[in-house]
Length: 300
Image (cartoon, rainbow, N blue to C red; front, side):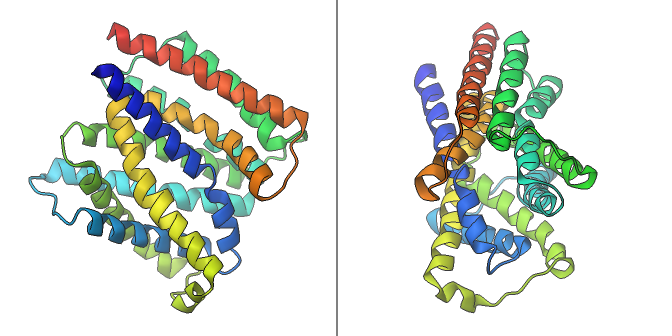
């Protein structure tokens, strides 16, 4: 039974990352007509409404501790992460952000080791992390070894990785309460939207719903709202519940590889042999890190 749950967790994590790894295409298209905060607001509003329609039952029996965890998860995983990532892209290269944000599993592992039980670390995790980061670097630079640092943008990307790691830890704690995953995800979205509201008055934002009359805008915002938000946050939170914070977060290493493959298939971009090697190294790092966490779970 335990093996079946683990297989389900790995499948859900893979499906989540497969979709998240392709969202940059939709976001890139929508940025022609929408601002970053606008895309963020509309996608999570759609996600919240869909989850409400799918499972229209109120979450009951929560106390102050539970609500604080929900609020923290909404602030970190919805509002701060996406705002920090999007704003970082306005200051620094996308390749820099891609490399830096991909270190989220490392922060997750450290936080899990400090704050969660049964989330122990061994050498294999760190070996896999180093190999994956080398691969991710090759993928993002795609043959260009010139790293242009921008203190503001790169620091924002580091903060984005940190807050996502905190989000993963919080969802792991939330999963231990035994609530329905759709209900907990919806509650997280609710707090994320609440924390997002002040940013709507500070950052450029237009409600202008006429833009959705264009099929390309409607399709891509629905993909982000239905797939990348409503579906993927549920599958990700379920995977964290089944596998633990460390095992699930390791799948983030695959995002750059999926992005490269998607670019070839949809945008007709070419891939260099260096990026191909980077993809293989990233997958190897994932495998090595997973072997480590599997051994840890058997020992615990």
